[in-house]
Amino acid sequence: MAPEKGATQALVLATVAFSLSFAIWGLISALVPRFRDIYRLSPVEASVLIAIPVLLGSLGRIPMGVLADRFGGRIVFSLLLIFCGAASMGASLSRSYTTLLTWALLIGCAGTSFAVGVAFVSKWFDAKHQGVVLGIYGVGNIGQSIAMYAAPALAVASGDWRLPFWTFGTAAAVFGLFFLLYAHNAPAKAHPKRIAESLVIFWHEPLAWVLSLFYFLTFGGFVALSIYLPTLLGDIFRLSLTDAGARVAGFVVIATLMRPLGGWLSDRYGGARVLAVVFPLAALTALGLVSTGMVIFTAGALGTAALLGTGNGAVFKLVPDCFPRETGTVTGLVGAAGGLGGFFPPLLLGVIRNSTGGYSLGFVWLSCFALICLAADYFAFLRDRAGVTSTDGS
Image (cartoon, rainbow, N blue to C red):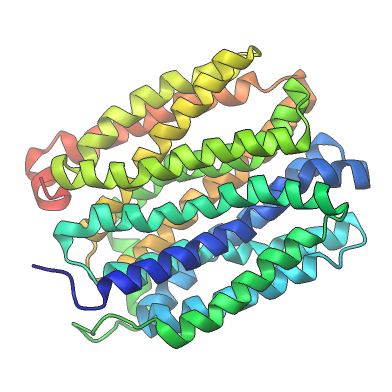
């Protein structure tokens, strides 16, 4: 079945909106090395500042996904962009570490945009196209890469760390109004469920929690590495703020561009089978991050980026396949798990750095967790071929 008329426009608008949201979500982490100097932060304080935006962005995905299913992505996404733009501009008014933490928490709302966009976009396309379409939508992750590179560059060029917050905040607020005027919800195929009815799925569908585990690794690992790498590169390799930002931008770009490929491969071969390749390879590349040699570390980081991006696309092929009527709701749950996967590792890395003087133990745990996900993929999908056929489109 061909996509609905207007589907391409909806996909483009949502992808741009997602990109702007993620750019704002990445501003704090991009500038943490600067804040560390301004406020003389300890490694744990810096880790908390990095992780705080991820917290609300994670937990907020569940209610935002439900709201998008209930009221439509157009109005929810528009209001979210305007709010995040205001929060970004508000962060520029910070005069202390505590105030900055408060604004960072509000900026975290930008991270809920993924659940809203998936609920909005997925309703425009049939199941056959979900993998590649949601992979294309996921390219909006590139916004974080833009922030990682542009925010430090703007701050250095202007001599004022506040300029990036005003620049990206204004862009998000303006596009929020544009989205409200020109975006349209897909023609309704069924009456939307009540919020209480949507939430019941969390108690009756264990498969939703398995997918959450997968996304905890694939997206959580991506977020954790992308937001912590500027600090880590400065600490281990003594890179400048601008140099670290440029390298992290490359990490985000690779992960982002692999996401549509992961969706396309999943449309063709099944998301569970793609993940069966991603997880063991990610366990190997994560060990490269243990190295203090730049070449091996870079190879490990970029290899991990490519695999996590591919895994992102595979997971969100499985979500609409398994839960076609509750895509936004389940996306909220799965997305929340992915966001929490980005919240805890920076804190853990800060504690490990304080306790051991290095980060190796954290990356060994990342490798082990990938193998745990491989086992879950086998038992939930691959062991029962009938189950793969019914839920994975294979």
